[in-house]
Amino acid sequence: AQSVTQLGSHVSVSEGALVLLRCNYSSSVPPYLFWYVQYPNQGLQLLLKYTTGATLVKGINGFEAEFKKSETSFHLTKPSAHMSDAAEYFCAVSPNFGNEKLTFGTGTRLTIIP
Amino acid sequence: DTAVSQTPKYLVTQMGNDKSIKCEQNLGHDTMYWYKQDSKKFLKIMFSYNNKELIINETVPNRFSPKSPDKAHLNLHINSLELGDSAVYFCASSQEGYRYGYTFGSGTRLTVV
Image (cartoon, rainbow over all chains, first blue to last red; front, top):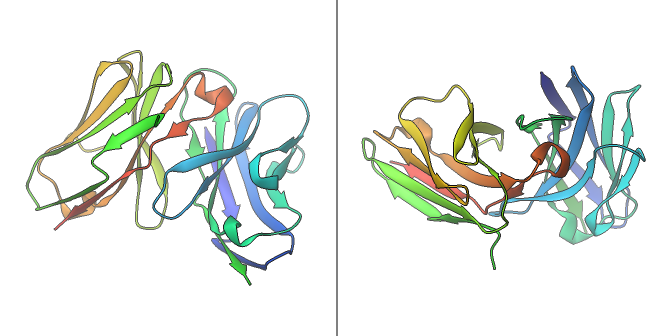
């Protein structure tokens, strides 16, 4: 079974500041990990994913995340926030095989302060 | 061309009615899903079909019935709608979703009054 915990349902950062959104997972098998972004009234868009290999993964819009097995974490970062980054962000986990479901965290709303 | 398209985008209906939401994907994916997003933005899987075969059926009232006429389509029919069914319903598709993630539609906002 898998689960995801996103710490902080709301995060506010100033424009140009570092963005850090936290995600911790629990999985009984090696996980695949994902970050999705949801803009208002839209569907979810894949930002980045970790499957195997390099633990630091880069995604779209300047975001990156690092898989840390020892900490069971997959935090999302961006060095400099833009106004356009304001959205809801979801971390998700799946087992590394089969057609098992993607399990989502409860989401973090990111607000950018001008 | 939209990769995963859902219709309608908005649906307002009275309690007790029966309604359907349609989903189509043109990505050639072999697996499709229905997710429900509640008012707190929590996403929960409802169903998954792989090549027209039901493979995930979460604890969902049997008033909800998915139908997959072919691997590019997955429709959701809801009988006897209740106030608690109000939510945003997302369709998604994947090819080896555990590896590549899902492609989501833009959602159907269902409001039951």
